[in-house]
Amino acid sequence: MMSPDTEDALAEIIRTASGPLLVQGNGTKAGMLRPVQASATISTANVAGITLYAPNELVMSAKSGTRLVEIEAALAKAGQQMICEPPHIHGENQTIGGIVGSNLSGPRRVTGGAMRDHVLGVRAVNGNGEILKFGGRVLKNVTGLDVGKLLTGSFGTLAVMTEITFKVLPVSEATGTVVLSGLDAVRGVAALSAGLGSPFSVSGAAYLPHEKKVFLRIEDFASSVKYRTEKLASQLAEFGAAAILDTDASKIFWRDVRDCKFLDDAPAMWRLSVVPSAGPAILAALAPLGVTGFLDWGGGLVNLSGPANEATHQAVCDAARAVGGMWWLMRAPDPLRTAVDVVPPEPPALAAIRARVQASFDPRGILNPGRLRAA
Image (cartoon, rainbow, N blue to C red; front, top):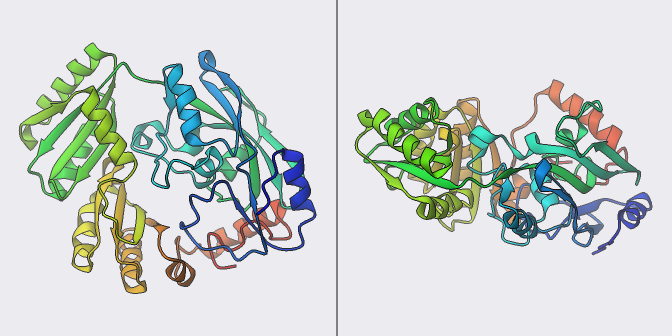
């Protein structure tokens, strides 16, 4: 494994590479999507460190190998946090480059947006070994095409990011969670939708089918949280009497939602993005196959775990496809990840556009080939 500690050294490795490269940070997402068949591995783990932090401007810049826990610790000292609440489902060694490269987002994504929405600028090295810079370090930026958003979620297949600049958010003084019990999945999603449609600025909306409970989060000043949770509970009275979790209990619960702690340790894990009304039927259809899960993002995100075999994976894909949804295979043994579509196939027109974009960034096709789809 090659672990350069500067951007220039990384660029030189890519420029002189004679074959495909597996691009990673600390390798925490190695079991996600497809395995990469490469002749060499390049790690950005040593291209690390926070290069800019302006708390008053709500902006941070960090090299791509900087660990997420280090970034979160620095933000916490100033009473701030990452807006999209990135999940820790791949352990504590994951890097900011891995989070941005995968566009992984947590419960606050339902109202606060995904990681992609908060990227202001990036530095990266393309497949020719050229160092590129896009965007900047200000919240209002009109420098042209927002390539940073294009690279976010590309899993290192277009360019290797070396530095990312992103927006951050103050930590709220208090957090409260309205809990509704005894609801089946259909009623649960109805309650989630009602909560998100209320005027009380819900920032988290999850349903746990095994507990038959709905959870709706509100974050703000303590007096505002108290008022709004009570008003929300009253507005949702048709769904039954509500309990309210305090700040400490809320933080523990939403951390577990963020990190998918409510899934079992089954060998395969999927994330489905669907219309909220489709979630209950998907859970019911897959339960006989030993697939369990829970709903986040108001029902729009279905987190699932179950047996790692092609039949089960196909059933999960079919369930998502039937409602016009998307799927991602988040965890599975290599043989399954090699044999199946880990993300939905692209329509021909979209595939043609992607191929042109790919060719412009990585004309030799050496960066993480086959990570998203069979090469």
